[in-house]
Image (cartoon, rainbow, N blue to C red):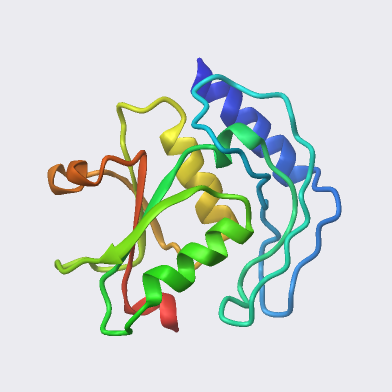
Length: 166
């Protein structure tokens, strides 16, 4: 039920953005999010927009509005590339868009494309991962977390691979 409400709010926000705009090269305006310091598992009707600006490093990011309960779900950002410091740079981009990043670090495994892995046991995590992907289209996939990611203790773990840099 909570997922349906959050999803409906996110769809409404994407279809009716305030202060939205797209940068050259983006095919789909997407939602930016407003910040919140705590993880919320209950639906929020607060759709107050927060306008964000994209950093030069991520020209694919668009601005818009979304529910604050979605962005309240915290993230871990992991770098699975050979580019030093990428997770920290991307974590700052997520934070500038209103997301709460609790950790950024390196990671090494066979990941095929940049993915936001959500914890299916956390209410709203899947919807939050979908909203994050809408805001950052360089995230190619949304999948449930695999067992190894549970050690990061985060509702969403974003693993960056080489396609993020393209």
